[in-house]
Length: 143
Image: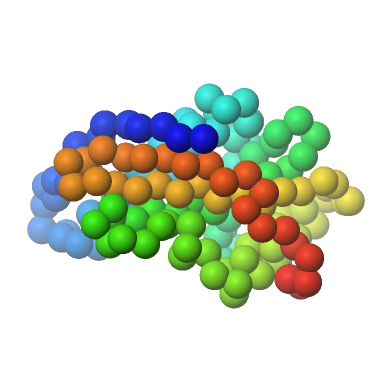
C-alpha cells in the first residue's frame, strides 16, 4: 500500500530548539500520517505511544479480531535506506516483548497478534510517502 501526503511544515524549525525539536516534530507527524493511513485502510487505532520501562509501542491497533502492534519508522529519502530496514532483529525482539507486556497488562489472554511496520519517507520537498508492511515479522523465536 502506498500513499503520498504533502507536509511542508516538517522542514521548518521555528525556534532555537534545533535538531532535537525538528526530529521530534518529524516523528510525531510521521506517526500521525501512519495512523491516518491505517485508519483509511480499515484498522482501528486503539492506543498510541504506549510506554513501558523497556520501550514504547508506537501504535496498537485492531484489524478485525487481530491485535496489531505497529512500529513506525521515518527516514529522510536522501539517506538512501528504507525506513523498514531500521527494524533490526533486536528491535523486533523488543517489540514482541513489549506486545507481551501490553497483552498481560490489558488482561487480553491468548489473542491473535500481528506485527506491522509503517515506513514513512520524507522527501526534500516535504512530501511524505507512507508504506504499510502488514505482518512484517512474526514472533517465532523472538522471546
